[in-house]
Amino acid sequence: MSISNNNQNRIAGSDKKWFGLPFPWVITVMGALLLFVAYSYNYVFAVFYKPIADDFGWSRAVVSVAYTICSVAAALLIVPMGYWADRYGPRRVILPCVIISGISMMAAAKITNLWELYLFLGVGVGIGRAGPFVCGVSTIAKWHDKKRGLALGIASMGTGISSIVFPLVATSLMKNHDWRFASFVIGIIILVIGIPVAIVVRNPPETEEQKTFSRKMSKNGLLDGWKVLPRLLKNPAFLTIIMMFITMYTGSQMIVNHLVNYATDIGITALAAAAMMSLMGIAGTAGRLGMAAISDRIGAKRDAAVCCILLIISIFLLMSRIPALMWTATVPFGIGFGGIVPLQSTVMAERVEPQDLSQATGGASMGSLIGSALGPWLGGIIFDATGSYLLAFSLAAAFLIAAFVIIMRLSTAKIQMPE
Image (cartoon, rainbow, N blue to C red; front, side, top):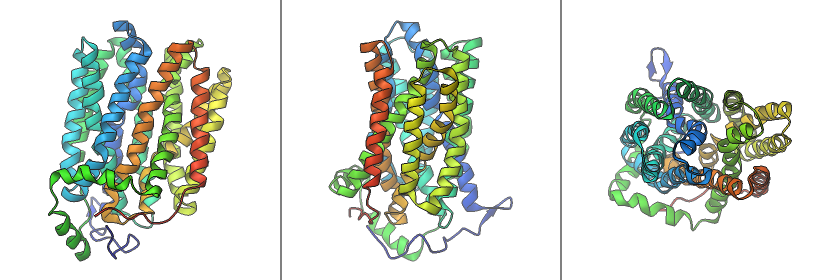
């Protein structure tokens, strides 16, 4: 769907202020807080990995399936949730997601069986994870025009700060209690921060042309959200973008989810490995802001290429098994991994109209979620088969090289969203 209004025009309602801060930047700050809690699971799962496996005597591959289920559940829901956010507004999607995510983390503290692990830390968190990112970043993109990359970078810092804070919080809670207590506390944090934020987030006021579009869209039923993806998949340009994110996230998430295991396996202490993750998170926070701001100048395509190069170099440094080089590698890896987070919205914002951005971002994010599902699972399977992460890390590098090739062939043409 396309209308003549484009995102370079002044956005209605952008002169509104809260406590002296322009409302577009209020939404940006709220988005950062939303992503801070929404992505907590991504980083605490790496810390919970070994304790859960040891507690129940399960293999790493079996435990990693929970993360895979979470990513698959989110991937299946993220496009419909983007569609519903475009139709009903982001608040009605984000709020129930936050509640489901927080309650699932709290319920995980009581699991006694494998199916409960998969239900709460897989399906439950996956459902809760699907809405906040796609709705948050696309809403921010709708509120900004000239500084969209910078705004998305600031919001994405929420995930970077999450990667710094939550591994250390989870490790500290487990040191004094256990992983169950840590999961329960993190669930409470998600609810306490996420619910007020979800209430504040909203779309900018619509232009007359957008109101006409919304009236037309309102005739569609709730289930029409499920029909968008099959139609989008018929577009070769859209498929290319999905493949780009699948390969980028498969390679990068294989490293993120197994870094603590890899480090402790070669003799680095658990606390030092958690600190290594936090250093990566600090670099990732800088990467989210810096690379997103750079994308305003060089475009999302070149920005993505630079991120891939940083990730590839970092993986080879990690594979050296030399502690000094491994610590060094966490910085460029963090910058590269942080830099790819805002890309799902910036890539689509260059290719679709604003009123379609949530569902388009959902489609791009589906690729990242598929990659996030594949990476940790493949890493666990390969480790169980070989007893080493050497082959897994080599495969991660291969995926990122493939991503770089796809990026170089990425078209800048507009994508026509389905009616």
